[in-house]
Image (cartoon, rainbow, N blue to C red; front, top):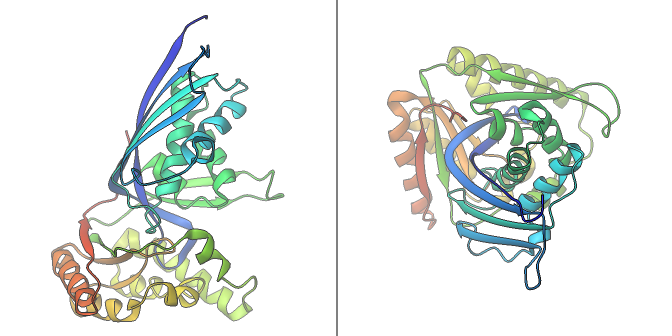
Length: 313
């Protein structure tokens, strides 16, 4: 329709992926949010800009061209999946509480927000499962996009077939009410691309077996609150050993967290944020201990406690 404008607004949570033994397959939604809206116009009048993105909050300092922003990429990909042309004029507004490049899924949140905006504004009818597959293919791994879309704690694993054609299985994971997640965020970033480049292309059979056991321990430990299993699960062998140098003081913070009552601590995503899993009654004590240990090393960090994985409406 000439002159028609479609609008939509969404909120997408931050996410914490891997959680030790859940490398590239397990993540939780975290109560820090990206709010985004779009006005999609079907006509481009003289003087109009085709794509505009107004950024606020933690996104205010980003200097990306609009076409390079994950918000726009997610919107375009959803249009393609829904068989619709991208509207000629798109005006996005995005405001975020999610720290950028800190291991809390900021880029995944933007990708998901863009895809959800397109699905809603243009009535594409894709729905959450299809958007989860779409964003997983774009992101390359599902452990952030799955909780960003479904909320809670999520397991996502690939089916058979080629990387390009495979489908994904998404499953909600129970989290025992006795558990809390403690996050400590330093002031410096870790870029995901650099963190992935550090990882080896192959691991030994022994490491693969240990990793499988730690992943199973994480799932069962989250469901039951079993501290011994969570201690095992949080001692990752696939990615943390190679990324320690990106987050100075990781071993000291793990020690401080455990001394304060945590079952363990590890990188959130690829860092630089650290996440500990602790009994509810010890969570604030763990947060204080980790923050104070980093402060003693000259790092001023923020900390917060997530009592339950965030829900998405």
